[in-house]
Length: 149
Picture 1 (cartoon, rainbow, N blue to C red):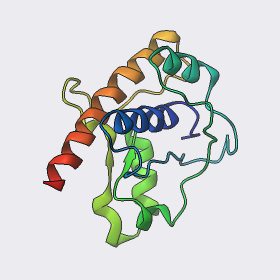
Picture 2: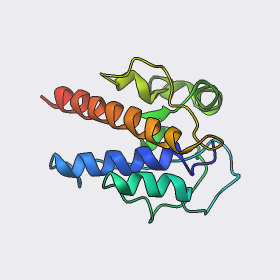
Picture 3: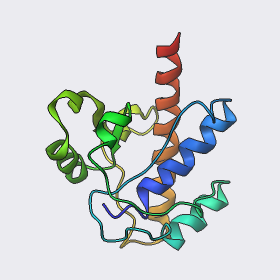
Picture 4: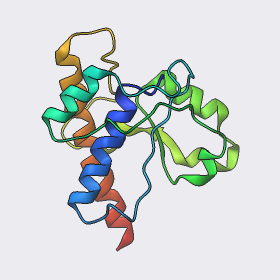
């Protein structure tokens, strides 16, 4: 929603995993929120701390709101939960609807539909977010590589 917890975590994790698989310069990754509450802010310090413990650097990211041109620019626009998915689908031009979905559809180990928002919870929530996002990012990369041949 505000682009300070889950989405920047996913951006950081995906960038790192792409780099580890030799794809760092070939895939563009960006995160955005459906609301403008935190535009220009760095990711939540708790998200940064938990991500850093696993080797992901979120410090250079700044929150931004989803833009209309994102729908034509990116191949996938992946939401963390049902509310954000609904907002994205509402804004999405009809010709790009196939690009919009939930990140967790790519997960292999965690059979949950959404990534829970850790903002109001305790430290364990940020660890759960990382577990889910790591799983989904691995699956997303596998699907992308399979499509390439």
